[in-house]
Image (cartoon, rainbow, N blue to C red; front, top):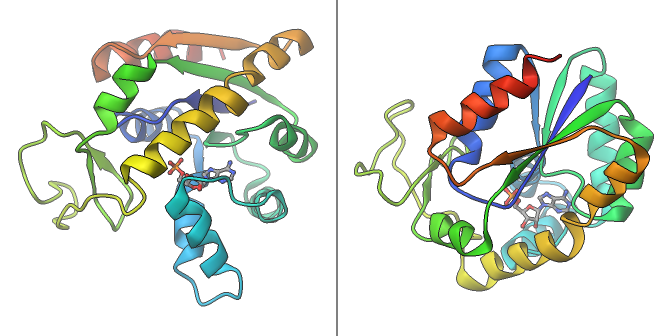
Length: 206
Ligand code: AMP
């Protein structure tokens, strides 16, 4: 059974997802990172993807479908942890068609707290790993890379991503509940270790 993580953006998410993937043997499919990599390629549609990302808007669904199908064809026999997909009901339909078996872990965080955690975060450009504003160093302790502000963390793009989350992604929880899919809600306002303890309780049932 695959896992689908649903959460508003915040700086601790990368850490949680990596921990789950490593501790429980899941392959990690992170939609935003896959798109970021694609946007840097010399591909006819890379510029287009970059432009959507800079504005915080959703990249067109046909590209998302292609990436999901490619992942199914290359990793279909793995247990997969998904992050950042689906973000709309249209994407839910196309996701379900490619990967029907999953349960949902929803990390619940208030809008104000999400904005606060996003403000001032820095990332490692080589891995996408996030470091919160209170991380003191300028370099990643894991790769030695200089940390940078993520190019699409402008106030406008952040506001757009948060709006898409509330308007298009959050309503999916009700759809899954109606369909009888398992949805586990975790209180993400706590520190990283406490949040991870809650996630472990859920995963221990599988
Ligand atoms: P993230 O790293 O999850 O914040 O995603 C960064 C950007 O990638 C978003 O602002 C979108 O432009 C794009 N993106 C990520 N996930 C999706 C998705 N499921 N559908 C369309 N665009 C996406």
